[in-house]
Length: 298
Length: 331
Image (cartoon, rainbow over all chains, first blue to last red; front, side, top):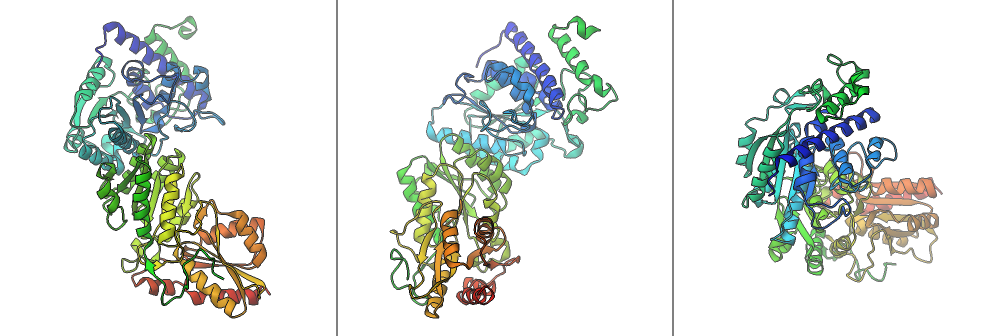
């Protein structure tokens, strides 16, 4: 693994904020889509695509690339923003999200867009596919250095298929599988602890045969260290419970499950009126990024 | 006249009977020897789906996923993404019955090169009863884009279909059955995905009167009915569709326009399977009086396979009566 310098961490934080700005712009233009998950996972996506994963935006089907399976497909705005900023396709195309004829489908479609490893949206099946990929790779080459990253939501863990896949990953001791759970504590209907309690989550996955870690999902250095440790585990699959803040970066949206499935302009109004939501979010993010301009202040 | 590539001297009392699942087991083994990327997954039904010979010959290429059909479908999709050619076998009621959405999204929408093998299809599963008798699977698979749907007639055609599925790049559903059914074709019988085959030609002495379109193991009943009808002076022929999707529209339309009355025969609900597919094509391209033989909006039940085929109206006599009825109603 690569230990990050302070300069590299700062650069990744700036990148994450740029990704968040793209997410707000995309969702606002689309007029529908999910806000909380994409904002909450921006730091981890910046880390994975700009520091951790081996991949080549100029050659998206490069055989030796690491694979990232987005199991909770609804947070695809952050995947799209990351792929565009990494150079897979022009950033201007981000504003076509969810529109007719766009390669940026409402939920990701592998056949449509380079860099997408699988179509997803219906929850619970991405982990199975990542397990299948990791298993096939081990058959193809027992000495392979590829890693298979799978991002899941926490609400998604309600799905029975997740546990079917977890059983198989544990049985097969898939050391090349690294699962990152976006533990933001919300799902559409409310807080995960109310909709369907998941705890003790660490122990659940540990008992299924995973090496489990818990980290602050916004501490880029901590997540990088956790991924490094996961890569070093050779007899088990790994799972990182990344504690994140839903809608991280826009304080007036943060931690509120009502932002799970609404875009700026259509979210709850108790803290910001609908027509100001996009502008307030962008102003906040530009302030964090140090790129605020006079227009934002007025 | 029976097609010359069929078994000689086909008769009800003497015909050999073998389960189509055995043809799958043989075909899988042969496909695996041809292509080292062929892998097989099982959800705790390795022996009865006839995946066991493969598992014993290629243990490194066999994955036991446990009783988890939804996981099996998506794991196979992931393996296909890494270049494998996965065959996933279970009972059709569970895979693709239970795993339909995973098949649709993770296999078909991804256009993943996965072969879904639905064993123990039809009421001829027998004593296990309705919960295990998939009679909706053809309909479930036929409506999914990218999916090829195969329902071979016998052990030889099942082997050929398995080998063809392994060569074909893309999702395939292959339907096989549990109980021994008549061996009608030979290894020399033609098999191509998407091509229907004329298996019986009416006597040249009779005018073309009824066309019998079959799929799966009821081909044999179709053949016996056609022979009996010709002996009664009714010019009946048989077109066998081992591929339900893509249906061989051209041969079907030619067959219908020649015979002017069509009977479909399948061990499946008449809605959505072969009967549905034929009705769709003919009503658009060649409107033809049609009688669909199969299960009519009912669940199965326990019993011996032959009893159930008779009870649900898929016997030879029913096909003959249907032909006579069509001739009377559409003179």
